[in-house]
Image (cartoon, rainbow, N blue to C red; front, side):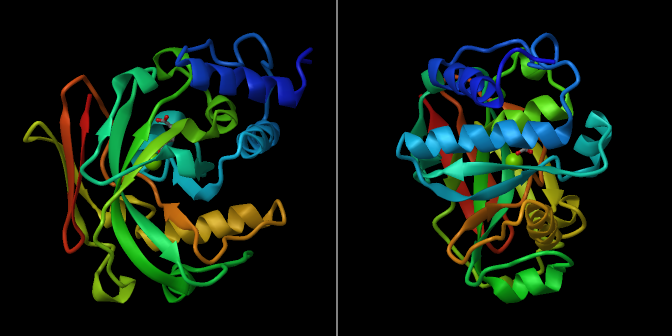
Length: 261
Ligand code: 0L1
Ligand code: MG
């Protein structure tokens, strides 16, 4: 049993984020027997603290949605976290390396919801019908744990490593694209770092949003119209360094970019 409350654990992780200082994973000493369910309770406390600080939720996001990442973490189910308005970086803008511990970037598709979506039993087809637009995105993840060394409950408690997000300025109606086939290239300084297709995300990025709605239903929550949902990396996550120029090109959705200052 930990001597720290869930709120104290959330504060510990938030302090690490705000001070850009990595910490040892909480399951190593503080809460060795932490379950995923309990970890989501810590994440809820973290979300509350961010809301209390005046930040607003842009939308929940999905993580660990590729078979490769799930296998690596030995998990059957992806995880979710929350993106806040103070995490958004303008397309073509600059991020500052000093705002992070050890950032990595991955290319994703984001869904902009036109209608609420409530589980259980939500399908990808229902998600597409409830989606107004999709757009390209670059997610910058930054685990608060030393060397990205964590177990599944650790990363859930740490808001799924969420840090900053660049949404592309071009939006398209989902029915105009075949999101399963959407070719994606992630480049840094003109060098291709990784590539993939939309199907890397649970077979189709809409399936990721469906799964998210079904997972949130367990907590009595739903996805809301207007929320922007990151569906999970189509590419792997690549380390960022000072001076990097990062682009994500998604077929039919155009380019999204940022520089690292
Ligand atoms: O967005 C993501 O896929 C992050 C999931 C957390 C795992 C990681 O930090 O690599
Ligand atoms: Mg991601």
